[in-house]
Image (cartoon, rainbow, N blue to C red; front, side, top):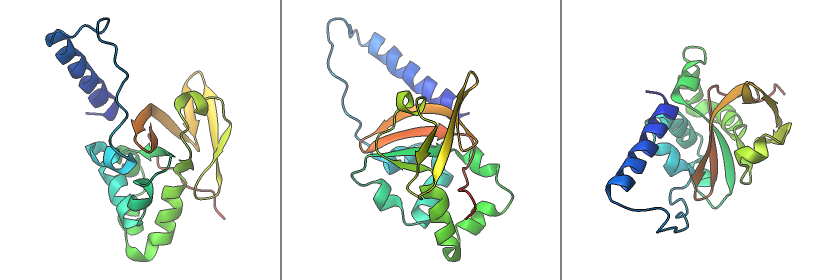
Amino acid sequence: MNIAFRLFASIAMISALAGISGVNAAQHEAAPAPPSLNIVELAASNEDFSTLVAAVKAAGLAETLAGEGPYTVFAPTNEAFAKLPEGTVETLLLPENKDKLVAILTYHVVAGDVTASDVVTLTEVTTLQGDTAPISVTDDGVTIAGANVILTDLDASNGVIHVIDTVMLPPEQ
């Protein structure tokens, strides 16, 4: 089951439960609670990001991405990692390839809270890795460094996650 469907199903279930409990939104308009999970916890709470979470931990970036932030993460799903040539993920997770893994992962992170409404006004973003990632907005959707943005604005306590369908690779140096 893909992440978009799983998220939709969760929202539908929450909406249904709210209806069952007799809560009338017009009678009770409380401000939404701020997100309680940080970026790493939010990603770890969804099995579609298990490869990303393993890579973040192997790269020693979990503490940073769980920190104060804010950060914007363009998060590839497990399916995105599966598109890489066979053996690539396993090779990147080896301790001797940590620097390359860090470069790839930090190319997916932008300092600041860049929401979808911000992204669509940009032509590029500067990543924590140091290079810029080009953004293209068309009638077909939004891409960043060739990856399609498939879900936006997953709010975390220290930033936001946008889900992408491809692992972005930094430009060759």
